[in-house]
Length: 117
Image (cartoon, rainbow, N blue to C red):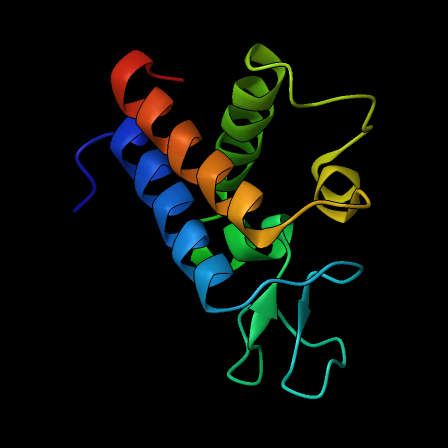
């Protein structure tokens, strides 16, 4: 049973970070081992973008939007959002690395745990 929404969203962000550690991509929500687009939750997925990783980590639909917003808020507060219109564009920014994505997801999870949503 989920203790509260804050705990759930933080856990979702951490699970998303774990997925990105396993494999990260740009240009698609998820790809298989051949680099072809696939379902974010499918068994064939081996790499995820930040949005796909959050989607795959979501146990329930309602927490996904909160996780996206928590990550965006974290990036904006740290001055790392830039001029991106959404998370997909942030993920796909030229020069972006998997390490940056993982750090952002983990830091957003820490922020949610400490300060809430």
